[in-house]
Amino acid sequence: MKLLRSLLLVTLLGLLLIQLVHCEEAVEDEDEEDDDGTVEEEDDTTEEPPREKPHYKKPELKGSQFFVEPFDNKADSMKRWVHSQAKKGGVEEDLAKYDGKWSFEEPKESPLIGDLGLILTSRAKHHAISAHLNKPFVFKDKPLIAQYEVRFQNGMDCGGAYVKLLSQQQNLDLRAFHDKTPYTIMFGPDKCGLDHKLHFIFRHKNPKTGEVEEKHAKKPSGNLDSYFTDKKTHLFTLVVNPDNSFEFLIDNTVVNQGSLLEDVNPPVNPPKEIEDPNDKKPADWDEREKIPDPDASKPDDWDESEPEMIPDPDGVKPDGWLDDEPLLVPDPAADKPEDWDDDMDGEWEAPLVDNPKCKEAAGCGDWHPENIKNPNYKGKWSAPMIDNPSYKGIWKPQVIPNPNYFEDVQPFKMTPISAVGLELWSMSDGIVFDNFLITDDRLVAEQYAEQTWVLKNIEEKASSSSGRSVVDAIKQATNERPWLWAVFIVVVILPIVLIVAYCCISKPEDIDAQRKKTDEPSPDDEEEKEDTTESSSGDKKSVGPGGDNKGKTSKSDLNAAADEEDDGDDDDDDEDADEEGESDEVKEENKSSSPKKSPRRRKARKE
Image (cartoon, rainbow, N blue to C red; front, side, top):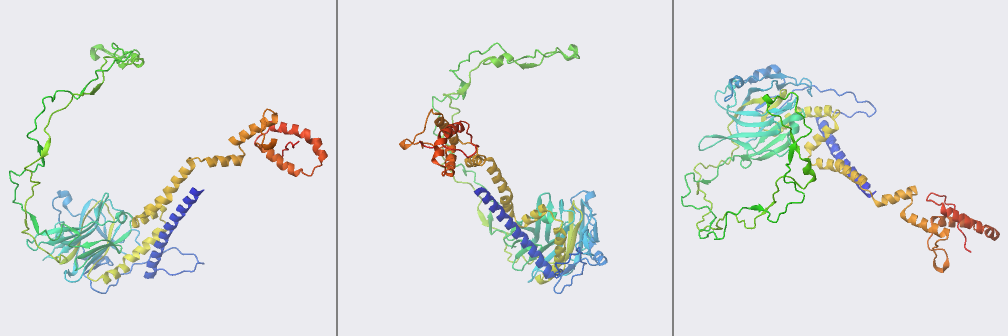
């Protein structure tokens, strides 16, 4: 019972914790809906009407903005975005063309009626499309905030959905946009197989040599799988601050952050000192820490010819060993096939089988004693190792000042940005891009997200929560809170293990309880039965102190005692008359007594 109570307590605590998490998510969803003002309180007595999708409204922005693309007008979007007519370098001619298809249309199952987007509609092709900024973004004293929405309508098998912020250059022709077109920043999701990536790459120019090198931010530690598989709209936001710090957010939640000086690879600034590339190890440099003793010599009695294993000289052939019997003999039951041709197939021979005589004997064939370790074996002699007097350690080239050293304390000041481009290869189609924004005001980015992605997110949660299965709910909860796996293990697996252990392990007290419940005789009851039977038959009598029959009391004696109290008001004459008859009756009952007899028994009264 203690085990069952503990099991019940653990289960209830786990279920309570899961319910608290569920309630927390529900409260968050209600808060989002209340803040947006799209949900109103209704009378509980009225039935809730079917949910209708809201209509799309063009976002209204005030404040600094370098690029805004909500795709609210198909004709304007088609004029602004330019399809690439270039070819990708380093690939076959058939694959080099950027012939992937793009479409400006409303996605399937759109959360907002009439909301258009830029959709990648072809698979296994190179896609390239770009658009100019309203005005170039120059990295001075304000942060760069770039964000856009991505939705994988059909999931993602292998491909990217990242954005390139193209570097400002004279006469930038977007029709020639290709993989080698210079960019300042690239960021966004990328996946192939089980490899999930969240890129943030910026190109840094060496102030001494003018060379440009890509700097990759550290990988985020969170689980990215759900963003590629849940088929919902996700908001990707990159913030690069003038103090060289950066933040990467998904759905307004920070998933990666760090410093441009410390959390990128390779680092922005090279080391102050480097190993001399012209330094070479001297010819007499000895790196051997131990060497064979040059003064050691092989002992005269060292015999290298002795084998490691020898036949046991004390071995004795077992009795009954059949030296003349082979291990295998022709199968006597085998018959020559009818189509066997001696001229073509050769002389036929029966297949070999185990010799039946060897199964009954100690062995067959030539007998050989077992091999044992050779006591005289020493192996090949080698001189013992000693410390090398000429040892100088592991050689390393000397360190010299780095001639290419520089210190850039403001890597934030990157090459200005003048265009946005999507240059992608994808094995999945139906990728929706929407609501691009580049600004230097965080408040503008938040307002834009409130009018676009937040509305979609509320509608997608509302439409999917009703049809979401328990498994999907668990997967979503664990993706957001990985520690919930421990709770599910305690609530589900641990109770199963405890129940199996409880049912499979029998306990002595359970056996006693079963005997009490069914009145099955126990070993003590059987002994008492034997003693009572012997006493009533006159062979043996258990006698207590004083000569009374109190040594052992059977079940029939106890039951008779209760009966005696009930008959305590009988007359003395009746006792004398029934005394002899009752003694005979008790004897007869004791002979045929069993654990399930009626408790109404009489006991022979004392003389």
